[in-house]
Length: 342
Image (tube, rainbow, N blue to C red; front, side, top):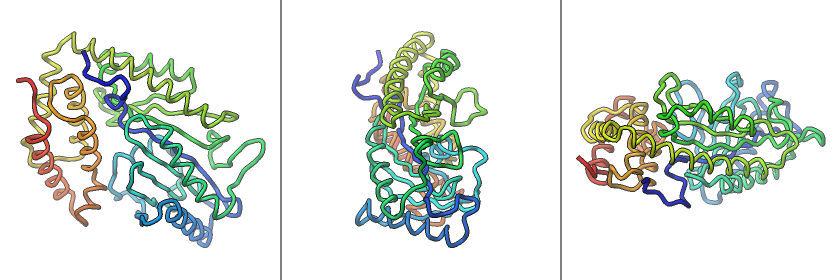
């Protein structure tokens, strides 16, 4: 049996997030925004963060192909931006807190406001997004139409221009070949389920469950449906994981032990490999094959992102980043998370 608290969904849900797209009524829409308009939008966003988070200084990142990734920023890209969104003026303002908040400027619209919570806190993420939205709108009114709602560069976001999402690990459903059926059923309910990590790797277990078109729908109704279906998907994932374990427990345990062995002894650890190994260890903890704390493991994974390591250690090379991650992993997986079976 799975060793989980029925009230806690963190065995399956890694992160929850809410994003809103907004444009100011007095500024031209991107990409027609001129330099003065860009400067003004950035100034408003910075002041909004200072108003919403007194005492915290927002971190500004100019986005380009060399920008280091964090798990949250990758989720933000996957969940909330069209693939062809213009990149004429990308700036991300971040407040590191719980929940974590981002304002990304000119990724298709003036503002993309995103709040993250660990595990299942989708309504808490909405509350934080609302706080930021109010602070932003206090600087100047947003573009709004009585018939269409908030105006954005993408008609698919007409209405609330709000998206909710869960990042989930679906080891059991993936292993039992049920992802396709789940995705079809969820699509009929206005939700999208798709693979988001190593998409070319058929064994990837990380998926995003997100809201779709919502014209004419109340934001609370939209997120309530997401929460309801997300919780139901968690239950089906737990059942599928138990079935998978019954089919071949030794092979499953072998993968978990090989994963922790690599993390315990590796000297260089690329982020892609680290996330793959991390996703192998999570079900091992849930099933009691490992000793340790699941939330602590999730927090460690977030801390090992390139973005956070560079924030902590400064301008380091990719090799130095891999060395630091491997050193931290050896300590973590020799002291805090250990095998429970051999």
